[in-house]
Amino acid sequence: MADIEIIDNGIIIATLRGELDNHEANRIRSHISSSIFTGQVRAVIWNLEGLGFMDSAGIGLILGRMRDLAPLEGETLILNPSSTMEKIFNFSGLGPNIRHCTIDMAIREIGGVLHEQ
Amino acid sequence: MNNEMTLSFVAIEENEALARMAMTCFITPLDPTIEEISEFKTIVSEAVTNAILHGYECDGTSIVTVHALIEGNKISMTVSDEGAGIFDVEQAMEPMFTTRPFMERSGMGFTIMESFADNLSVESVIGNGTVVKFEKTFSPVTEVSRMR
Ligand SMILES: Nc1ncnc2c1ncn2[C@@H]1O[C@H](COP(=O)(O)OP(=O)(O)O)[C@@H](O)[C@H]1O
Ligand SMILES: [Mg+2]
Image (cartoon, rainbow over all chains, first blue to last red; front, side, top):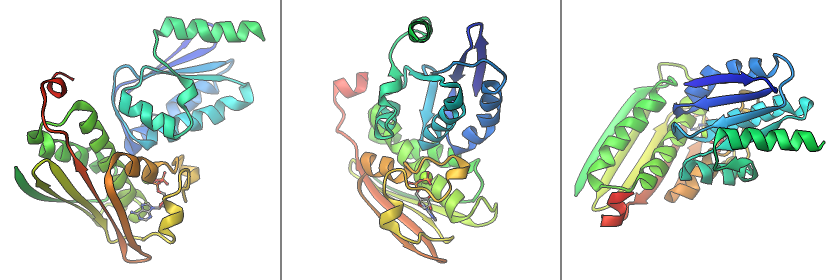
């Protein structure tokens, strides 16, 4: 399950729940992708706090949306994955995108980065 | 504890969750930690998804078979398909290698399986299918692991 919220300053918050496998990734991909293409999106925050399971399909999904964001020079942050998920992200080079913090703190970080440019 | 099971199902994506659920139930009596359960589930998910997707292209009729044997606190498993087979196993096991980049496969399946499993091996013949074999030993129960 995925809740997609676009907040005022062009940040998408994708809150994932349940189990993210190949089947689920195929179901939610176009939904997330089309919200990235709706306009002035500058960042995607993946909120994984409530996600119970993820395999390499999650890596494909997030890398794919990073490709969507690349022309917009958008940021990607991955919030609060479980320790098993964190290992999977580290194998895949996504370790630097992980944060253990609240959504508000992540929004502030992205706001800050954009402000400095 | 000793136990043994075989589970067979047709190649549709919905059965990825079925296999994870069945295998999680099967190891529950070993009292694994949360971390051990989620690593084990991930290995099962990767191997079964590969069989359904790469072995059979989700054809909805061909059969994937999962066999598991518990001896003491160790599980030995095979995930088998009689599908496409792998052209070059060594290359397929390299991180980021995928034959389906257009489907947003990350090519990390085998890397994850090898990291989370003990003694993973892959036998494959083009046109005949693939067998992925692995073991995982769960830690003996302690008060600490129970609390996690
Ligand atoms: N059961 C299988 N049958 C046929 N080919 C397979 C099978 N499992 C894996 N492969 C091949 O090995 C490659 C790498 O697998 P994997 O590491 O899981 O990455 P991914 O599934 O993301 O492609 C696949 O792209 C596929 O070509
Ligand atoms: Mg795979």
